[in-house]
Amino acid sequence: MTFANALISQWPAERTLEFLHVPLAAGETPPPLRETFYRDLRRLKLPAGTRFAAGLVHEKSSLEEQQQVLKWVEQAIGHPVDVAAACGLGRRDRQVAETLLERSKELAEG
Image 1 (cartoon, rainbow, N blue to C red):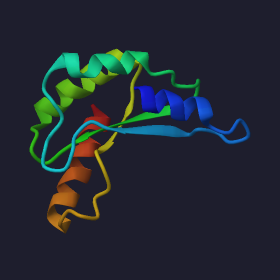
Image 2: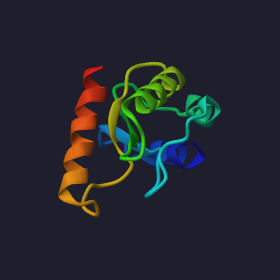
Image 3: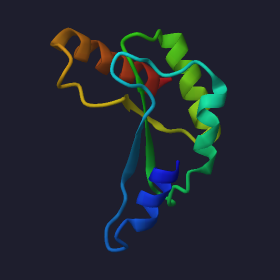
Image 4: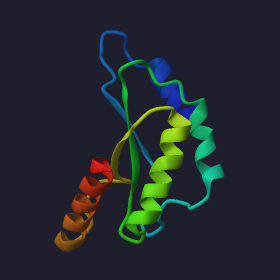
């Protein structure tokens, strides 16, 4: 959270920080299934009105696993968050990208 908080503190005052996207998975590695991994999110100093986008949607995780990760993230952040893939979908094939978009929708709808 050191980098994210530094970015937030240096954000230009004349610009609105609409959202902060934090990747919680990496390439072939899905988000960790350990609640302790997400505790550090409590230290995030998110400005009022700035949305948090949890980059947790991953093709190697089940819906149930991602729902659990989302619960841990929201507990740490202290309110509902947006969901996203850890990074863009451009390096994934069309079928995987469509699957991840559908999963994002399922998670967002609860």
